[in-house]
Amino acid sequence: MRSELLVCAPLRVEHAALRGSGLRIVRTGYGPRRSVRSAGGLAPADFGALAVAGLGGGLDPTLRAGDVVVGTEVFAGERTHPLCAPELLARELRRAGLSVRLGSVVTTDHPVTGDERLALARTGALVVDMESGVLTPAAGRRACAVVRVVLDTPRQPLIGPGTPWRLVGALRRLRETGDPLLRWFRTVAGAGSQDTVRSRWSKEVP
Image 1: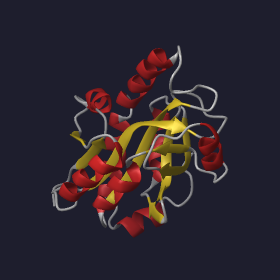
Image 2: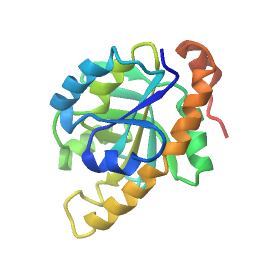
Image 3: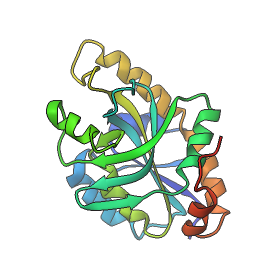
Image 4: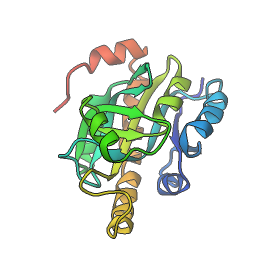
């Protein structure tokens, strides 16, 4: 197995933001249907750990556009996929000067707005997307992470006059996740099994 981090960037703009970061970036496509096709090709691929990185919709009312959410787990329908050493990744992102929150990511099969967004917020999840829950199982027993930069929130809707500026800012922050993701990978890759890593970093790192 190659000692390499594979980063899934669903959208073209997300792929462009991360390109040049020194990471191996794969554009996996928008939404669950394209993600299913991509995941089928990723599972047998040669890599050491997998991360999904991109933009997402904030659910918690205290989140603001540009905040970074590190997933502790991903919910997709009835399935839950735990993630590897999120506290360590959050520490590395904070070292880079980013505003970071740790919490659950929920994946849906359609864009979420209005009352549905409020209902998802009541589950305690921080951010919603349409790909992470489909892509993360492709990691198998390998370490896996999810990083989503908040683009829209209940108070800052996706369609609005401020969207272009928020998009520019969110993509800039997404680009800044590259080095922290690489540092996270170098640590987890040298720490043994995924279970060992989870145990070692079971508490938030200051």
